[in-house]
Length: 296
Ligand code: SF4
Image (tube, rainbow, N blue to C red):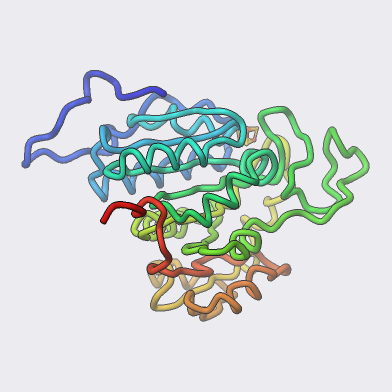
């Protein structure tokens, strides 16, 4: 576990505020054009808006490109073992419920080696914000098929194309007992990314966000068309959902009104295949939380 830069590890006086720079730590070593850069910026902006005390905030990750995230946040961080971010984060939250806990994981980390931990973390519903940065490939190890790679994806493990249908992380999360918050966004729509992460942070429980993330090095063609195609995303919207400014909403050609209290419709919309559905699929603020067990 690592911690804060000593020069900013202080409690601000009441008239002090944290600036964006207070959450930044070094230059991110992700490739130019990697979707992770914009997601990092959105998270740092959220920390500033919520004035999260760096000494009360911890980012936990596993292994993979996205799991370098804690190194670039000037908060506490734990860059752990492959697939083990969830048990570490659960331990932190259970022992220190006063901390703001974030998990940053990737499609290999969460949906392959870490799947058992992912499933039980959903059910435990401990109060934390979870970002699955899903680029549909193993990037750190130079292009192997991941559990979320689309059928036919050519990689170093499947040079003739992957042969199995991918895991749908939204559908999987929605299928677990005691699920309480499931949302999806896409890294190339920063306004939506920000509002989604904010809604997740404000949710009292295990808030799962899949961020569809570009890897321009190993999956260059996957999202190139999507980024410039206004019909590539379908916006799920509702008064109880994730709201974006009306000017942002005008940019969407496909919009569905979806009540995030309806889990059956959420499962139906998770199967949309002619575009990428983004928004809040499901929310239940009253699901029991394991981090409250024994608190009363
Ligand atoms: Fe990002 Fe891909 Fe580079 Fe990894 S390999 S840092 S996911 S662009």
